[in-house]
Length: 198
Image 1 (cartoon, rainbow, N blue to C red):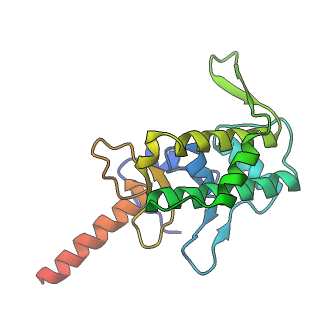
Image 2: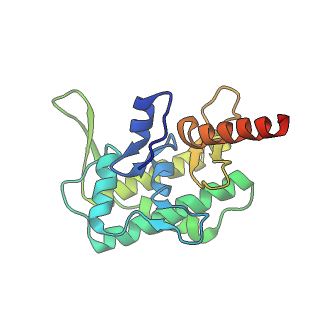
C-alpha cells in the first residue's frame, strides 16, 4: 500500500480516524463525509451498519452508552444527506431544498445529548445515538443560520466532494486539506509546469 508523505504527520493522523475523514472543521460537515466518493459513479457508504454509526460517533469524540439501531442508522443517513444538500445549496447561493430543511429541523427537535464535565476536566456528552444526531442537527442549523455559512466551501479537487468551513484569514482556502487534496493539486501543477518548460 502506497502511503503519501505529508509535511505534518500529526495533522494527517488527526484527519483520518478509524477510517473516517475529519477535514471539515465542523462536526456536521465531517458527518456529511460519511458517504465517500460522492462524485464517482459508485459512491462508498461508510455507514453501512449501526456499528459504523457507533464507530463514527466515537471517532468524532462523541460517544453513546447505547449501541445504534437500524432506525438510528436510517435517521443518520437522512441527516447526512440533508446536511450535504443544504451545504451545497448555501455554497451555490441557491434556495434551500424544503425537504432537506424539514429533515434537519425534525431531527433537531429530538432531545439532544446532555453535556457534563468529567473527572478529567473535559466536556463529555451522554445520551442515546438519537440524541447525538439531534445535537449534530442543531449544530448544523447554527452553522447554516449564522454568518459563518458564508465560509462554507466544497473542495475544488475534481475527485473530492468534501465540505469544509474556511477559517483562513483571507477566506480563500480551496482544498479540504493541504495534506490531502491541496498537496496533490500542487504536485500536479508542478509537474504540468515542468512538462511545459521541457
